Length: 154
Ligand code: FES
Image (tube, rainbow, N blue to C red; front, side, top):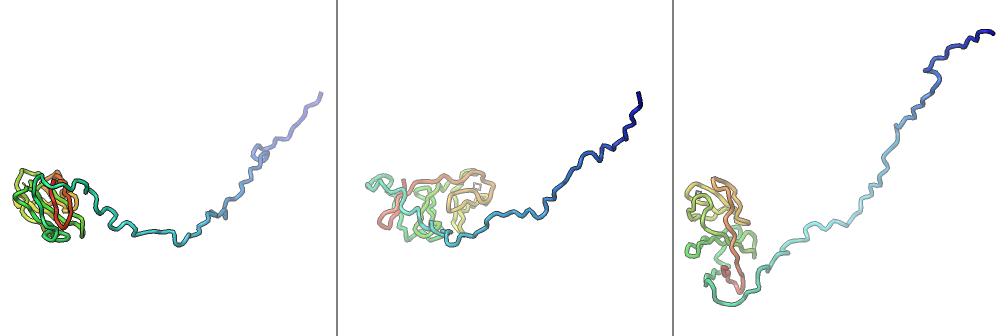
């Protein structure tokens, strides 16, 4: 019977953790720039002519000559209660001329904006959206038909 003296082995030395360095593990994504596959600027004027289809006469009888509507501007057709605009050449839009604030009739079109004289609201000639309050709702869009150099409402 003899005592066995075991030398104490520090636990820290029993395991060796080797930390393999990850340095230099470069990201090897193939950044090959494919040339010539960009087709930017391909959708100019893609929406021309939509909305045609009812070429019959009759209805409201409010025909406006396309030449009367300035590109980037518009005209207020007071009798019909609409403002007709031409945001870009050949694209015609119409909106209610009644301001959504408290109901004044919009008074002018300038710099791409439909302007209400009562309290200064401004609306986009492109979609009738509010550009400046106090109005908070867009002008209601109206349907227009363009044919033979004339814009027909409704
Ligand atoms: Fe048009 Fe007030 S009614 S801004």
